[in-house]
Length: 264
Image (cartoon, rainbow, N blue to C red; front, side, top):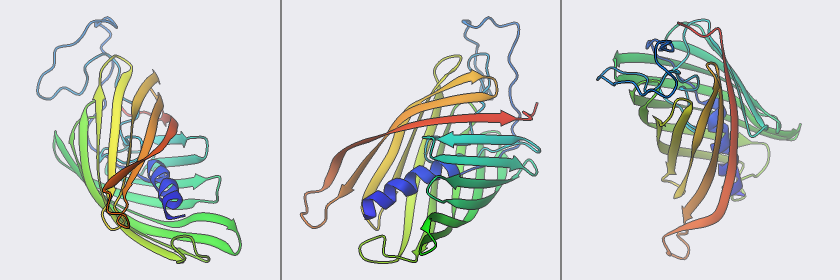
């Protein structure tokens, strides 16, 4: 049951995580043909002619880059998860996260741009992770800190988070509560005009659980992105001392993101 809970929890990170930065979007260069590769300088935020509309998250983990003021981001993951985010300012974003299994988690995040290549952020979230009925509810809360190196097109993120879940029923090893700390890293890399490679890795040291994702993101339009990937799971079976055992599980990941009121 604990491993199933980690699957649900990991997928929910793709919905509950969010971030923001002061970096400007890069507008498409109308003088550059779609197949012409641009030259890149040290401050470049684009390789080809289209800016990345889905830079605030990898698949499961956040970046420290977030919405501009008055921007709205709508996201759906595996049909089950949905999220709406709003940029209050260029450095503060609020979100509402939901899922078909009764999840309802408000979130808030504050970011600080250290320089053009480094942004740090901290987030807090809390609410209802799961609700089967009135007698089967799991409350959820916690926070995270992270740093992102790079820009909206190409970046690398590292961070740590602590969360606590309390249920009205036993949902993990005959217990009604679970606290967990984890580290995470993630990356974005543009490899074509509309194509990005994205990955993330999470490690829960207390429970010796490893998970993450890998896949591609396709920019459908300047404000829409489609993500296709997989999520493997592994853990160290301390009872047998056989080391890390990769389970024959590859959960498919499918996400759709839309950015409204896109800033210039």
